[in-house]
Image (cartoon, rainbow, N blue to C red; front, side):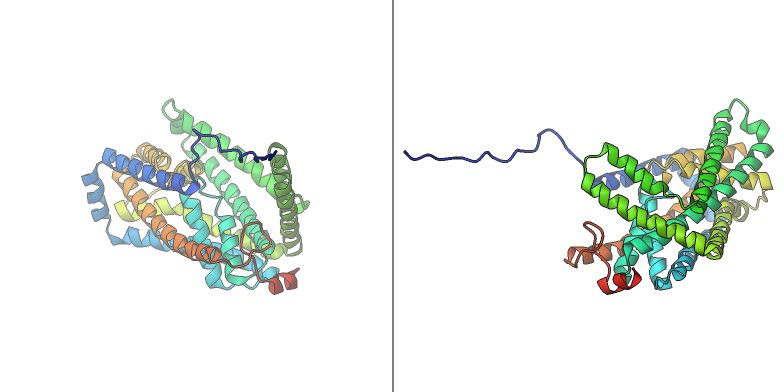
Length: 377
């Protein structure tokens, strides 16, 4: 008697569940952000905003362009200083392009300050063939120096703003703003101290964090490899910081100068657009509000959150809302230009990955030149 054994069909995916891809979510968020921005401009007044842009002229526009370019160049300089200390040969052109790619990712993802670093490492690794772990080590140390300098500068500026405008900020109308600034400044100061102590004592906070995440995730092998790579990367960060302290402090100074430029950006625009000279308290309050609101980036470019918050601060300082809207539109125009260049450069690297080039040390990522990577290790 003929017996037929039928193998069980593979389990089918559960129906009724729709998972949106990251690319689709990003596109939708960009479209939503555009809609929110149009709504905010309509609330302020389309004609009034256009008139203000025409009255402001070309000078404020040029000033913002120079500031934006200076920020990217200073970030490139800081990363380049650390790369030279560990003998990573990356040309200034590649560093600049990698920073554009990272900046683009930061703008279009829910993070104004983090998120673009892996993209920078991937881009530089693909263009140079250098070790991802080595590049990630210098990127993370540069980010540490950027964060420490920012936290110190932001906390100092917050204290100045709270003292100068204590009566207004702690009034019933703006008490929420005052409390948020106090809490945010305190948290950033604590994080700043923790980062500094971690570097001095050769700590591994990121490795510890990956270990904690692995406890609630099932991909044990993946997190074991990730934890090992993170440990190597943090060991390099600590080595560079402790053995090349002067270089690290130079990078700290570079990023501190970049933060000063960023903090002065709103005031420079107001002065050039309206001819209103601002005092120290007004300059600091505008800067603290802008940077603090970017920390709560829920949409690309923090559209909505940044607009509403800055309009409130302009109202508090009795400045024209149309000036605020012109500042935000000009800033987002330059963000859009950088995002366009960054996505173009990143797309070229992505095309190379899809072309079937060999994979490297990272799972699923194209890798460095084995000869260069072996020489570095």
